[in-house]
Amino acid sequence: MILDALSIIYRATKLFASMDNEQTSKEMAILKELNDKLYGGIRIPFVFDDQFPISLHLLSPRLRNLLDSNEYDSQRLWSFLSSRENIIRMITATEMEKPAAEAMSYRLVAFYPARPKDIEGFIQFKQIIGYMIKIIMELHGYIVEQKRVKISSHLNPDTQKALKYFTTASRYRKLTNRDLDDFVNDISDPAEKEMFKHIMMRIRTGQTQYQKLYALDKLTSVYEL
Image (cartoon, rainbow, N blue to C red; front, side, top):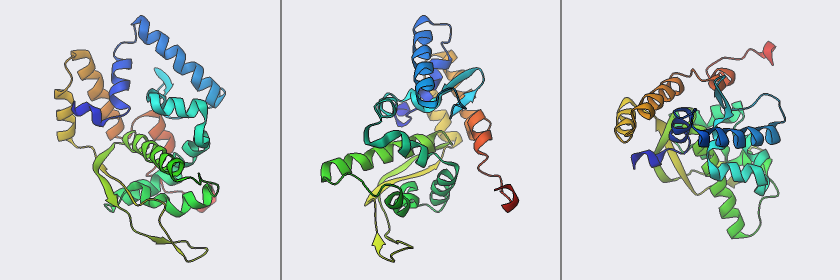
């Protein structure tokens, strides 16, 4: 299915389109419990709107399990990658037709000096980073354009040594009307079609609750810092 390219949006579509369903109510209760566990009643991140007060990123079973278990310090890693500043960096890299992960190289070295030392563990850690980036980019209206794009080396500004946290990573592009048509044509249920178009419209125009809070296009004055 073409929809397999999406990690979150179609899952959100199916959930939101069946809110009166008993199974959906159970899933919402599970998500709310995890929301409370992870965020303790404070402002919940990545909420679509007040009608659906759950974190959209938790709709990914893989990410949900990672954050719940906190394997590889996943909670701190997610908070780091999904910070406003780093999302702006990843989108800027994307606009320059570079992999989003390229913007994170030396920052990850500084943020995670005690990374897994065994090769297998480090590879898995980088895969987790890549998956988290995919979800973040999708929730801001971007989709994978090409996988395994070679990443350039950068100088560490402190040591002036070349570093390359990743060898290759995915490059993204903005979702287009053509993408939307292709996705919608892959959905058979009429209610899901309409919900999918509604979610996509809100994300692509920056009108979700979380996008308004992130305010990525807002210029911040030094006096606001």
